[in-house]
Image (cartoon, rainbow, N blue to C red; front, side):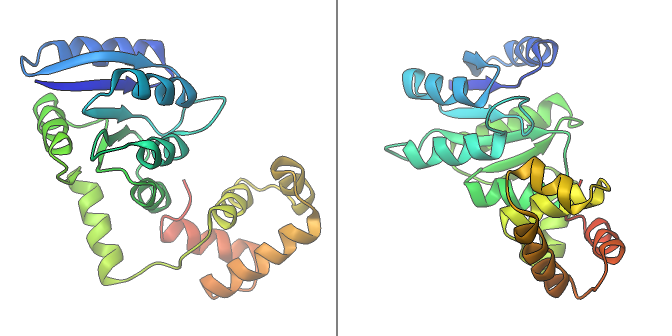
Length: 208
């Protein structure tokens, strides 16, 4: 029996997942969490085999940071974290894998594929949705620029059309720091304007 903890901030989505997982005879849901902080606490208390993790968790830490903390705090080889999300950008995939996620699944998958991925994750085997696996292979063949988490944040806000002042205010940094990061982003992407940076970032799926 594979024991799992479900983490998703949407109550209706969690309820749907719990109902779906209840139909699998060899999977037992031992807990559910609506935030990253709650997931970390329950993981320590319940010691599941797999944590089914959404990426966007509303207020508080996101799924990537939650994954990082769960993986960093485990004493053995479990729990494994299986990301289950609607977000499929290269940036999201890279961040989740770097944080220690064993697998990355999209919510559009069929139930049997989700069940198989949960069992694979429980055994420490990589489980990826076909589109995600394709992007991972594409990245290996043609590596994307490596951006720091802060550079990804700034690039995401840039793609939303925010000026430097608003980006600085949102991220609690100075405008001078934003400009420094932008110069580095331009260098890594091989561009020299904001519009070009956003265009390349979207083309290479570096931002949502």
